[in-house]
Length: 390
Ligand code: NIG
Ligand code: FE
Image (cartoon, rainbow, N blue to C red):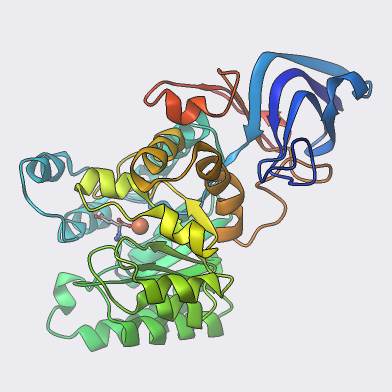
């Protein structure tokens, strides 16, 4: 079945050989042809081919679906009181993770699945067409395994994060916990995961522990990614580059040396503005990364502690306002950047042959995503050619 999305005021392709030849490859007065699950053609509407169905986009902007490459959706409970305490002056140090671990361990599989379903529905309605999600609130062999089993019913981008923090029962035996993660827990979790991640930061895991865990994951066929330099400076970003991680996430305290290493690598720096917003942290300057030639992605980091948002448009607006990305750079980072952070080349741009994952905005230009913060601008979310707007 073919469907022509016609009357598009501004089509963002992310193909620099198309349209205005900018990185967003913008075609004005455009049309887009979907054949089944994939894009068959994009171009000016004056040259549009015939189709069985036609959707009138009414002079709106059509952009690639957002790719949320970093989320923690498998958990139970919330931490609203912790957020309120932070806004009253308490610092964020990751200590609240233990609260979510306790609630997650008590929850049934059905309760965990209901949370992932609710949040993935929110993501769809915020224009997200692909999302990653992590374990990391179970921290026992069984609870990590079931977290990933539940997650894999919703996305193929699943990440084993048994090394989120050392759970309380191992506080005096952290070496034993690292050993558990890289042996028995990894054996149980690897069949349900594509990625392995470690929270390499102050109060979580050091760089030697992180390297040991990532190395074991790689030996099990998982691909590495990392949380690093969220709470302070450290060597996590250099480790990510060294193991050719697809992405290193947060990078709030990245040094010049870190940025230089990233620029010479194929590791993406994923910035998480929801976390800086919700923890009232210092804002990393996205310009430093972009000006050095680093590939930047934006993601929600949706989790009940440091960033309880599913809104990619909010993340775009914050990245523009507070991380100094232009609206064009922020949109690219939330789409093609996210695809690069997941090492995917079938999504993130709108050219013939790619998956038909896109969003029609209630706006004439993508700039409104940052210009109209907090306003619902998602008209339609199409995933694999299907309208999945709820
Ligand atoms: O990415 N930094 C580590 N993990 C999460 C936060 C987890 C939590 O506070 O529950 C993050 O921000
Ligand atoms: Fe995270």
